[in-house]
Length: 499
Figure 1 (cartoon, rainbow, N blue to C red):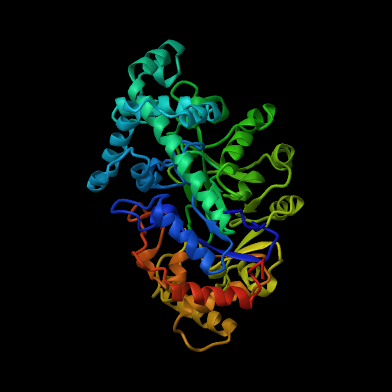
Figure 2 (cartoon, rainbow, N blue to C red):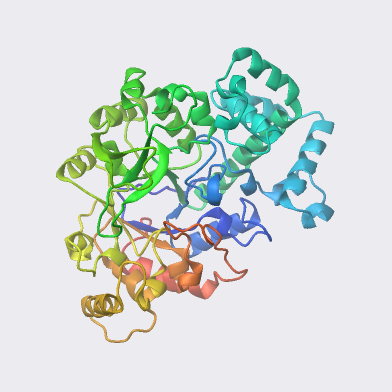
């Protein structure tokens, strides 16, 4: 099938936000197989141009996609079991086994069969990060999953002799990790081709910071603010106290040594983008304000209160990206303390910023920027994000977190007045319509909002470790009638480029 015309961020379009783990592929997690292709078919039937995902790296602490063990690797839990069966690496009878057992079984079959030339080609393509990541995973498994700073000092500090011994000792595990990454890449590229044939483009997500317990930090310690002896963070990332938290947010990620990254021409970041652009057509750049200024917290501090602002890499960083890639297909996640400098950097490179409808009706100082009548065309509007409650949950909130019952009721009244309605039913469709009718070039709707699900379907609760990243679609939830209804709104508000 020929590739259809693909959308650009400057087109008037729309799409859906759904992480592949949320697909209804199996008992443990969604993957890149038949259900992912079915979701692409739903997007096409509904007239949608984009599928936005969360980060697709190997999830780390708390199963968070924003805490990956590598900035380059893919999540093996997303490997398609359907394609393993189709390729003869897994028997249909193995489908009831735990996913980890299935992947080990497929690897054993692959090894017995003598390999695949495509696997060797992939190893060459990914050599800049794959071997170190595979070694990291091999050592980590041999040491009961302990973070790298707790490994024996020679391995922690990457003594060449110790690393060679580890490669020889963990050959089988290293080969297994290579196999998993190859299969992930193979599956993702097949899915991307399938989407392109149907006129659907993919939006990925790059977290600004990396996890401390990651192959990236272990491999390139000199790029991070770490204790030189132990490798533990000396300074960590977060945001200062604000309307939402009296103590701010202490994320705990090690901070970059931007001076060293600048000295090497931001090569590590350029390679990171290159790896992502092999999978995605556009990228949401997380915590964009951190490239202008970032909150530096001493690692020994339990909260973010005793931090300070430090200057980010600014235009030099984006100039380096532009020199490497030309036009930057980026969405700037410019939520938070947006200063004039943040806006200037975003606009200098003509990057669309983000507008969240759930932020439009409160009393904080930023609300006017989120009201649709104030949007610029160069923007992406969401009903909510992965960090928000669902629209139904937000609207029906009896008062929790940072909002009192009086505040939530006031927001409901303001929202209904803005919408020009008194009927409180189907608030999710009213908000979807509001997003679609806005002048923002791109409108993205979380699938939970499309389905009108409540708080129980929320993807993430910042500051909580309970039940995050676990939302799953029910089989058959995305019906033809739902596609027709969404397509009608898409056509009414001119968000189908081909029309």
